[in-house]
Amino acid sequence: MPNDSRLGFGLLGTGLIAPFHAKAMQASNVARLVGASDLYSDRLAKFAAEFQCREYASLDEMLRDPEVQVVGILTPNHLHVEAALKAARAGKHVLVEKPPAMSLREMDAMQEAFATASVKIGVVLQCRTRRAVQAIRKAILEGRFGKILHADAYMKWFRSSEYYQSDAWRAQRRAGAGVTIQQAFHYIDLLQYLVGPVKRVRAQMNNLTHPTIPVEDTVLAFVTYQNGAQGVVQASTALWPGTDIRIEVNGEFGTAIMVGERMDTWKFKDDRPEDDEIRHFGSAAVATGATGAAALGFHDHQAVIEDMVAAIARGGEPMITLSSVRPTLEWALAMYQSAKLDADVMLPLANEQDVW
Ligand SMILES: NC(=O)c1ccc[n+]([C@@H]2O[C@H](COP(=O)([O-])OP(=O)(O)OC[C@H]3O[C@@H](n4cnc5c(N)ncnc54)[C@H](O)[C@@H]3O)[C@@H](O)[C@H]2O)c1
Image 1 (cartoon, rainbow, N blue to C red):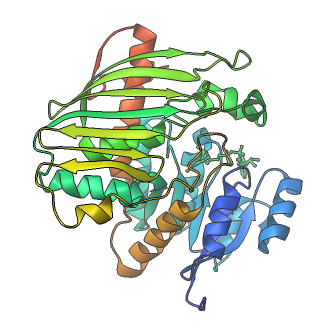
Image 2 (image 1 turned 90 degrees about the vertical axis):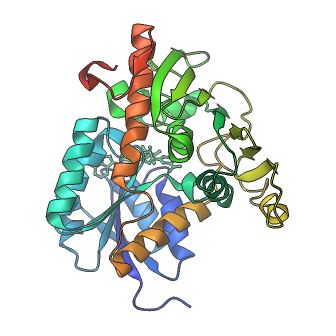
Image 3 (image 1 turned 180 degrees about the horizontal axis):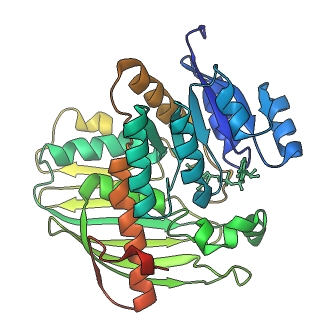
């Protein structure tokens, strides 16, 4: 049963991803949706009626509500920073959708603002919470793979032209459109979280089947990690009907493959009793976004929201910190620079002004 101590959330943006946050809170005993705001009043009214929450005419109005302790920022990618800085100045915690910002300079400004205001910021990169991902990370930290040799992400997804036309920002580079920074960001982040940081990137970008948008729907990249491992990122929204993502990690002594959110392969030379259970982590029945933006479960979002509540309650950092996402953004930006220059790009990025 929910109790009165549930932390109050206000959501900025009631578009495609907002219902996933709202459903996650409906299912949660520690978080509750207080209200929301959107530029489109009809969209906001429909959302507020469906999820029984307050309507705010603006972010300022939301920030004045003492029942809102955390602001969920669910606006287009390039608009996250301004809203986050405003929320920090108002003394509110923030949970920001991915990518948190479009440049490293903005990430650093956010980091500083939240430290100054003594409020927390967490990022919604919900795939990190999957049991299969956590198992792979634990095995890496325990050295079960030995030397990591390969770490790859394959995202063969489909998004229709209607999806790209549903909001103008989905076709604008500087607003954060393009498969690399928008969809593949989750899986670049998983590789970064598991095996990063990256030393060198070589990327190629194309638009295969969405001629009405001036951004890439496909990216292919070769990667060298700082630890010497190699990897591939292959991501597309052009590949109908869309199949589950694959994250593959191969080391001297073991291989792990996650498909969607399910552990597909888990094999180590030092087979352990707990391995049988790990082989059954996740479920093929849980949708993870392959066939359309709405083909997604909300439980990963719930885990991120509840982790944020726990961080606020216990006074620590949330699981997905801004600083842990900075190298992911740097890697994605390096991919854009590499594709533009048709050359290898070394990290850290020498000049992020010039990536697009
Ligand atoms: N974690 C995930 O799996 C996942 C999935 C989809 C989208 N996202 C992220 O969520 C964010 C939103 O994506 P979306 O697909 O829902 O976009 P969307 O365009 O469907 O919704 C964004 C909403 O923000 C509103 N908005 C824009 N500016 C505003 C402002 N100044 N004040 C209030 N509202 C404003 C728009 O009117 C729109 O309703 C993006 O950052 C995206 O990357 C994350």
